[in-house]
Length: 265
Image (cartoon, rainbow, N blue to C red; front, side, top):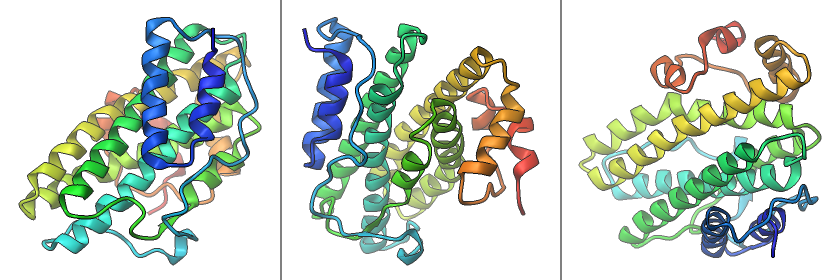
């Protein structure tokens, strides 16, 4: 019987973006059906395999994307969001391969398989939306900033949980409602509907990150809030910028006393 960590490596080493998403979804089906064993960690590649396109640039070299009234702007934003979701597929399956130690319960695997499956669904939805505009993932340049967070936290599960779900995905909760509203104002209700699905799921992803962050901090005898703040100061290269979507963050169990002390205006 193949094991889950090997399946996770298979996702990470698949270069074609559509095939990567399919591998992620297939692995999730196999895990839920009981045809994958859970037998510990396997060292994933330092960087996941990626397609030849899009061209990757430094984050500072990329323009800001905002949904506007014309198709070109909406394509650019959908492409940027698809790139985020492709990175999110790799981040979830890297979590499974790299950090599934014997002292973590099966529920840890169940949760991150679900996250990896949903990120693959999100990527596929956005690619389908791009295709309806006559565009495709890879048509525009993208930045490599998200995987820098993975490299920065590859040494420690607690650091990875602190930064990826509880900084990066939590930031998505703050900005996505305005993006949905922009698409709706542009009359692009199909793109808005796709982002509604993503927004709903991402609340669950932040909740998953918070639950396992608190669990691992407790295993190590650490205060969760103080430890999270320390890890963010050490490993996050940006700033936590308000306004925060407290409704969504509260729904994810991510209380303001964690992040507001680090907020910059």
